[in-house]
Length: 224
Ligand code: NI
Ligand code: MN
Image (cartoon, rainbow, N blue to C red; front, top):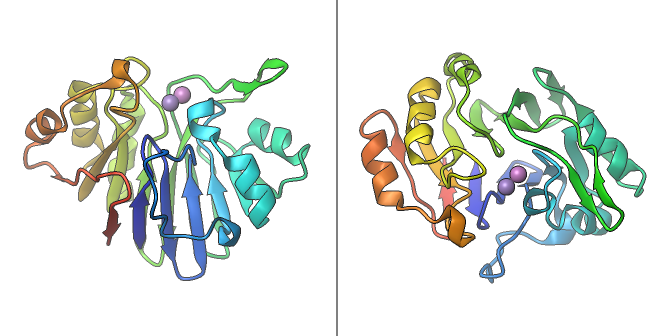
């Protein structure tokens, strides 16, 4: 699986024919995209906040990509003529490219529109398995005991928020890594705004030898 970090909580991944975005709030710093927006096949959205929905609507309209999200966000996007696959917390589904499980996140999910905030259902994360490789995107979340349930999933790469204030901070994110026990952890949702500025070095130290921490620069590609 080829994974490119697009800043904040946004990632692109491809494997086989799937070319997907997760929470496509793409940093302005990204100049070299590893993908063509028109060729995106799937877009995963963890919750309704603007820094996660990002450009999802525009990219979905241009590419015809299918959006995979919770029922409420999917119904909202379907009203905009976007292809959707609604799921809900705890649900696992086999799709043509692999399997997707929607995991709980402890956060909000209001959809910010010009007419105010719409109800966006429960926030979530995703465990995505393609050809035996498992990727977990936690979404925005606080530390939860539910994360202990992810250990049995044998996650290869976990994308975990570490910025604090809106999500887990470094201390709790390191605790989450202890619960999840992924092979590799990639931090996200930090340094985008002053309030979520953190030291990734401190995170690396806190995780220790529980997992390999891979801090990705914006645009950096990680293959596993
Ligand atoms: Ni959020
Ligand atoms: Mn966020």
